[in-house]
Amino acid sequence: MRVLFLMLDMPTDLNSSNLYLDLALEFKDYQHEVYVIAPAGVNQKTGLYNERGLNVLRVATFKQKGVRSILKKGFAQLLLPYQYRTAYNKFLKNQLFDLILMPTPPITLTKLVLHIKKNTNALFYLILRDIYPQGAADIGLVRFRFIYHYLRKLEILTYKTADIIGCMSLGNIEYIKTHNPYLDSKKLTLLPNWQKASNLEELTIDVREKYKLEDKYIVLFGGTIGYAQKVDNIVILAEHYQNDVNIVFLVIGNGVMKQYLKDKVAQKQLNNVIFLDSLPRNEYMNFVKSADIGLITIDERFTVPTIPSKTTSYFSLKLPVLAIIDQHTDYGKIIDEAKAGLWSVGGDNDKLFENFDKLYKDNNLRIASGENGYKYFLENLTSKHAYNTIIKDIHG
Image 1 (tube, helix red, strand yellow):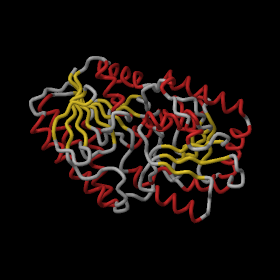
Image 2 (image 1 turned 120 degrees about the vertical axis):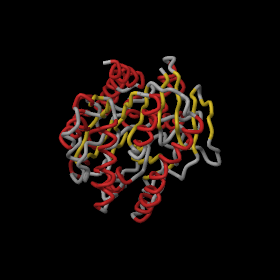
Image 3 (image 1 turned 90 degrees about the vertical axis):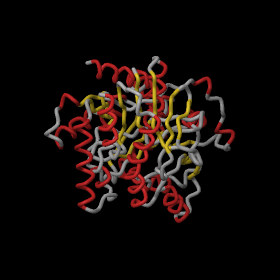
């Protein structure tokens, strides 16, 4: 098949990857001809490039990631479909695609999908990762009713345009069914998050020695540091355990809430929190391998089921999970099913501290949870599983 991925982010660093690049490479490994449309790198011109055996149309756009201003980010995403369409018409218009894969976010590219489908009759597989705009509205990012209604119309158009909608969890499927009764439920399928399995032998960096953490109990929070992550929970934990010199909270990543988190830590004079910028995946996974607990934190205001993608990194390297979640997600059920960690609802700090203490003091529980998560990952969350699910869905 000739496959087209529409991406909002594709790493330019050959040592790094993400959810969608892993999947694109999986399609390539199965001998499909893969094209990607993605934002250009810094100072990179719009053009067609060969990257890792993929045909990548890099498009010069406004900055999409790490934009604190909601207006600037919204403006960039509104312009994105026009920038992508112009580049598509110039470089790819004569290519006939069999399959289009697009994740949410964004939902602003749907009209581009319609344009491509009109030219190619391709099947459109929507990879539903964010339920937007409701998720953004839940945490106060969409405040004006007219903006919400405009985005909601785009969301409905996206669902109607999709031939198949891959949802992260059963909770996501039920939510979409309930709030979109016009939709043919046969379109909805289960497509959990995924990641390429790591080669443990390649993870040779001793980060404990490098960062003088040999005797520390490392609580890792890795990935996007954004609005949805409710970073105040990290401060709550760090403050509660600040007198235990063995415990350190390691925050790796970037995002619009990173400076806020740094300011909170400084304000409370916490010396048990270490910050590192985003790292290439290969380097980051050495930290995952060396940590004792993988921290997940979700804003408890969410009414949409949220499944954090960083879970796959934790599970893939046997890192037990400590999760703070909202009451509407079925993420806790997934943790329980996998027996891969402990969770509590945001705001219930007593339960949070109780869960932390259990994992901290019970080495056997921690090891067993990590092993269980790894088993669950191998059986459900590899990029090969995602590829096989999509192939089965489109031929089903």
